[in-house]
Amino acid sequence: MKRLALALAAMVTLALAGPALADPIVIKFSHVVTPDAPKGKAALLFKQLAEKYTDGKVSVEVYPNSSLYKDKEELEALQLGSVQLLAPSISKFGPLGVKEFDVFDLPFLMTDDAHARQMMASPMMGDLNKKLEDKGVEPLAYWDNGAHVYTANVPLIMPDDFKGLKMRIQGSKVLDAVARQLGAIPQIIAFGELYQALQTGVADGEDNVPSNISTQKLYDVQKYLTVSHHGRLTYSLITNKKFWDSLPADVRPGLDRAVKESTAFFNDTAAKDNETAMETIKATGKMEIHVQTEAEKQAWIAALMPVHKEMQSRFGKDFIERIYKASGFVPPQI
Image (cartoon, rainbow, N blue to C red; front, side):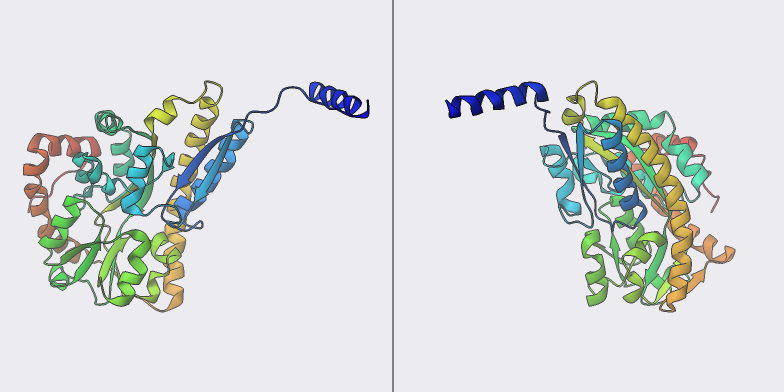
């Protein structure tokens, strides 16, 4: 009788408690930078907003600093459904078979915020996004992390200064051509391995945004920094298309809102953090910082514009001219 009474009491308790809550949908968000970099901060904000706006129906697990996947692994993991969110540089889309995104690495194409955001908001991006979707990858937003600077263990003042240097690049064919045009030796190295590569001499230099140089403490293993603004670091917040399309109707609006708000946060934070990072780097006293003169900049442009012409055979002249128009870039008359 006692066992029967206990069983009945348990049944009553369950009935009063109502139906069991379903397990939350888990979204794994992997990235390669530190939690205090702009991308790291935006990822944590997305987690907070996504969980809030879906009333706990979604749980976001953030894996920073290549703790889950490295550069070469993460895109394949996304396609396989092992991870649901990434925010890679668009320079890394080549292995997906979407070579068109390499065009954004053309030197001096998007060196200021206005032109970069004009490009990413243009109708032409719809065509490029469709190419990603055909690979099972859905771009949710583009995050603008500002213009690149160069670092190295020798001063990089004029184009000839690159000759013979082993320069770390991302996997873009355009970046490979840029390094070779400068007389450097391109080295594709994962971001998570960059510090060690510079420390051990596997690479002599690299280009990046100040916030990444600061948060990764690259000033400990590089002596010189040149403010060149020759390229742009744009991330794409991407997801597995099949996963995203399968989300319940009551979940998607909250996630869409989290994407929109974290994107605005990222763009604002990146601009501020890159400014602050330059001050931080200066304050260490470990790097000599050189800001290009106008004459030096024109010398770099003259040296690198042949890459634009070379890439016409890769992308087609018409395609590159469409990119120029969409971004507002006017090719200099060299």
